[in-house]
Image 1 (cartoon, rainbow over the protein chains, first blue to last red):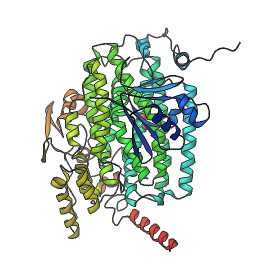
Image 2: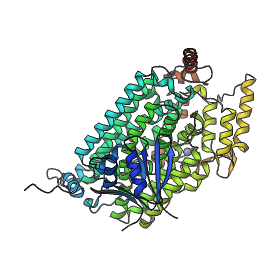
Image 3: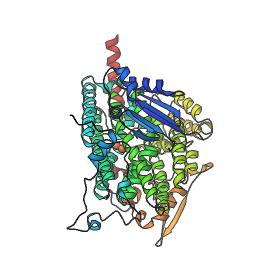
Length: 91
Length: 504
Ligand SMILES: [Fe+2]
Ligand SMILES: [Fe+2]
Ligand SMILES: [Zn+2]
């Protein structure tokens, strides 16, 4: 069975550029709109890149700012200064 | 030359490690007296990895930001009389159930994580448990603040704290947390951190808050999502606990498996209240309980347990039964509350034709066959002035404390009864899942504070229903009974008439 990595954001002005970045960086992403929130699903893994978010908001962005708009997620977390990754694979 | 900025991983290691020390005045086992008796074996605490590398300084920064945003919204909600803008007065009953049933659990979680943070020997989990303890305190406080606006206009809120400790159905969530908090620190972490936060919390918060958004409740959406933004960290802590315990020693597996089985089933039973809220109490519905179960348990839980297979951990026992019950649970629970509306701290009603059609569409296998006829009969009885009240006190399941109204797996017209004997007494259960839990810990569960037993033993204010309701601090005729004819409905209708007049 394919394992689905998933991340849910609040549907707010602050989260929208992050959602756009995730859409651009993760081919095959599936989007589920709910009232107030957006759930993004993808087989195996989802990555969020600092650079892609910064391009969209025009300022420095620390991936830990995700904490302000995150609702839920599924997958193992790996976090560093440039990326935030959720995945089910084991390197 | 300026020092090179450290990477996140190094920063985190420096900020969270080496904060503890080996005690010398007292042996470590005396300082940490609770982390061995459960049989869990830890060989190296330093192997604990916190995947969210959040340091305390960033923690305060982010939490302060969340609070600022939340209170700005709450302020404008109050200023703009947001309580008048919700979809329907019925909606408010879902919030009553939340404040009386769920918010006190946030406080229990705060206490529980403070305890775990004190009693786990490793510094990694102690820092994480401490942050979560603070989060949970924030959750209960913001929920009470937010919902206080509703308390100014609607019944059923004022005595939430008093009711949580006394009212029959509130003993279901209360006893769930009492059970977790009276366990050892590792069981607590598996129960609340893993089974509840990781496996089940999405089923509570995501549909609930999305439902609040859909029903125009801006204040609840905001505290909900604000609390939920801490939840990803809690989920990650929960899964880290499991991995850590299973990696530390092979002897931990059977203990952890037993806890996962137990807490999955207990959580599933508590969430029956949410199932009913989603299918019956939201005037505008977001998704059915069954759909939520498919997304958040079948799909997300499936991926998770597939991942944990490498440690030998299997899907919780009776997960298949729980999935089959998703077809029935909300209907059976709402029926219980309809029958006992005189003893409930929120209002009930029968689903409208439109709502029944929605339920038929969402539950094609069960609703028309088993539940629609029941509601139609009750509707006829109401028309004839014979609204059905159940005046007998129900038998309760000793484990989950829910009235024994659930049906046999695969046979929705027969009530399920299980029982066990312990020290000469017979104990009753709603399901195999609840019976197994008792059989594993009979000494603990034979001491359960069961509301109906307590009433019969004379510990709840007296022998009659009015005596007991007085002991609950229930404002009879306002807090309880049907939505139709309630003071809530009256104030709502008055607002709506006024708004129409203004609109011309
Ligand atoms: Fe919480
Ligand atoms: Fe939590
Ligand atoms: Zn039970």
